[in-house]
Image (cartoon, rainbow, N blue to C red; front, side, top):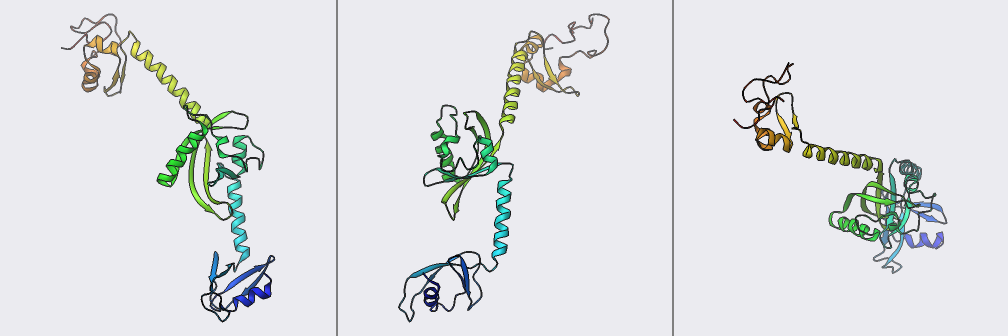
Length: 277
């Protein structure tokens, strides 16, 4: 459409203000307060020229410099985030964007992920295939509109690592409906948690199977836990020991310097009362 024809058609819409872009050059026509910030569709219902249909889409941007500055700022923020960000097109589940952090996180070169299926990022997890993992995320999105989760991901070289992620759905002007996913690498945190879990399991095994009486107590005498040997030695259940506290089973002289076994009645040489009164 040439500029002359465009302006001819727009003569019948005197109530509109607009900026018309033709071959990259903006031409402004103002007849009322400006319409700003979005695309507009103009309908001609009854005109001297007989038009009754949509003619074109117009974009009114009175301050293109401000718009460009905001876009540049947003782009810089996304590119420098500490988290990885990607966009997945809903229509075909293909990656259409990944910020530099996301590319480095997964071991890909700049732009290499674009056009690839999003499932290449998912690892097998607890018997679930990458496709199954993706479907579970999609199901949560459809139910609540967003999906926070932890996921086992897979790098380009096949290395797996854990991420904490959050995914939501947005409308994108270029790509249509997309899912935006923000990933934070928590692999080191997961390894620390696993080490602590194994250490706790080992300690619990020693605690439960020790032949010696073991109590967990507070300075004020409260008992938090007692192992089976402590229960057998005192004759109390663990629940009773927690309720009664340390004073019910420990000699008053416990903790004092002793020269030999206690001669107090009902007190064993190790300072524990041997059973219920």
